[in-house]
Length: 168
Length: 192
Image 1 (cartoon, each protein chain N blue to C red):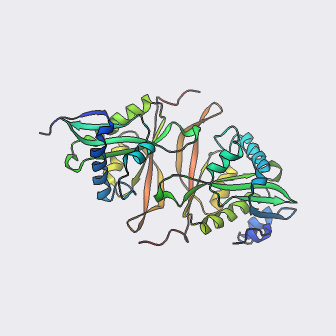
Image 2 (cartoon, each protein chain N blue to C red):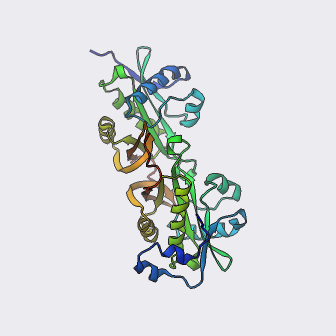
Image 3 (cartoon, each protein chain N blue to C red):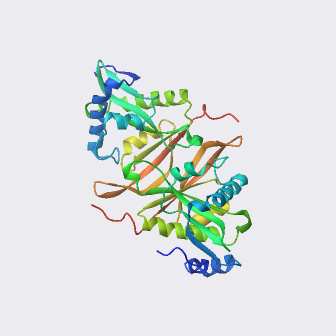
């Protein structure tokens, strides 16, 4: 039986493990166009400061989730892109699901009305995870980026909140 | 690429039906935008905003903000009798290197010059300029109600990716937009 884990706010001290888990995801070749994890300063500047979560099992971080703004334009301040990564050793235990559920709640508490995700179309597990939590497929971006020598498509998914951004 | 061509040269790229329907009365030239064009460009942008169907923005920026937000290459104007009657430009969609060749287009035509193929000439020239600049994907966010812009983009090789639901708030209403993209078939083809 797997040990229980909790979803908590990410601390700056979690970064080395967060980065290692990101690197593991990159190594699968199915998670992101990125080919190397950045330094803290770059990652920190590229992500919203709220809505950074980790899954912690005893003291060990086994997954993380965070949001990136999609635009500097004020009209899109409530639109953010999701990243969720789970350590290779902890996959298949529902950690990604728990992180995504908590991230959705945190994002709505922070006033985010649209979450979006760009997922390689081959990454069926990630597509299914998002679809089971209120995301829908917007469409396919054709050969949107070059990844290890191949121009790859992504599926754009979005989850429009029914609680935030509904007023007139 | 020579952008300073008479409008008729751009129309030779189009099917006959569109060519005859849209020929303007005075020669229109597509040329690079200069900083001196900004007052006219801004006025045309504000005319577009006033339609309520072109952008979520509700006020135009100062030159420095506009200049910082748009790619310095691929800025074009349509000029007739020395007057700017339309413009187009690109915004990067991301700071991430993998998306360096993805850009979002803006295209605006003066109210008095609409319906004469100026937008089509600008967008055709923008596609050429973007490919010359190494852009492999152009994208556009268009209000579903803006049938003219949707038709223009579809005619220039864009396709609909999908609909973003209530993506932002515009004059009291949460509005959708259509995401369109045009994937180049001459840029971003090499693998390796």
